Image 1: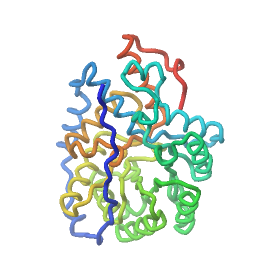
Image 2: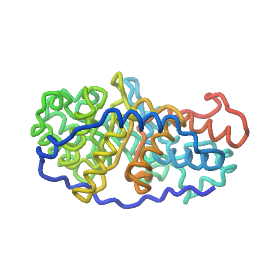
Image 3: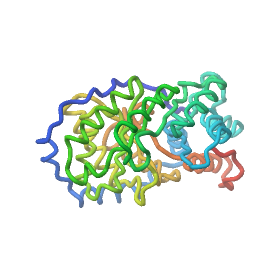
Length: 331
C-alpha cells in the first residue's frame, strides 16, 4: 500500500499590510456553504484499500494532543510514544510497512501546554524523533485568550525557548466581535514575532465568532499578520470544527494564496473524532485547495481521540472485524 507522506518544504507566510478594503468586500454565501457541507458529509466514494490508504494518510496529519488539567510527565511521554508508533506493529506489517528508520507512519506533532513542552522534547529526543515529530504548544492564554498581551507573548517565548517548534496561539475573539481589525492585526503580528523560527497556527475559535463573514475576515486578518496556519477551534468551545467553518476558511486561504502568493495551512480541531469526519475534511481540502494541501506542512488535525478510531478502522480493513477501542494502546 503506497501512502505519500513526504513533507514538502513550504515557504513561511511573511504576511502583508492590513487591507480593510479587502475585509469590507467579504460576503459569504451561507446557502452555498451549507449545500457543499452536506455534499461532503454524504460522500461515500472511498472504499477498501483506497479508504485504508487515506486513513493511513490521515494519521500522518494528526497533532496528537493532550490539554488536560491533570497532564503529567507520564501521560505526555505516553503521547510521544504513541506519536512515533501510532498503530500496532503487527497491524502495520499487514498494511505493508514496518517501524524502521524510514517508516513514514507517525503523527505530525504532539501538542501540549507550555509547561509540558520540556517533557515532550525530552521523550522525543530519547526516542530519536525530536523534529521528526514536531512539538506544538498552545499559548497566549489558551483557551480564552483574555490574559494581558505581555503575558501572552511571554508564554510564546517560554514555549519556544523550551523546544517547541510550533505554537498554536488563540486570538482575542472580542476584537473580532467588535470589529477592531487593526488591533487584532497588531496583536497577531507581535505573536508571530515572538514565535521566531517556530511555525505559528492562529486559533480563531470559529464557534464564538457569530457569523461566517466574521470567520472569513478573521482568517484574512490572521494571514495578513503572518500566520502560517489558521485553526478552527481550541476544542473547548461549545461549537468547534464544522465543515461549514472549514469551507469558509479554505476559501479564504485560497484567495490569500491567489492574491499574495503564499500557501497557508488549515487545521480543524475539536469535534473530528472518527474516520468519517477525517475523510470528509480531507476531501474538503482536496476539492477546495488541491493536493498540495494534503500534506502535514499545510494540513493538520488537532485531535486526541481521532487516532483510536482510525486504528480501529484499519484493523477492520485487515480482519473484517471492528475491535473494541481498549484493544489498542492509548495516546
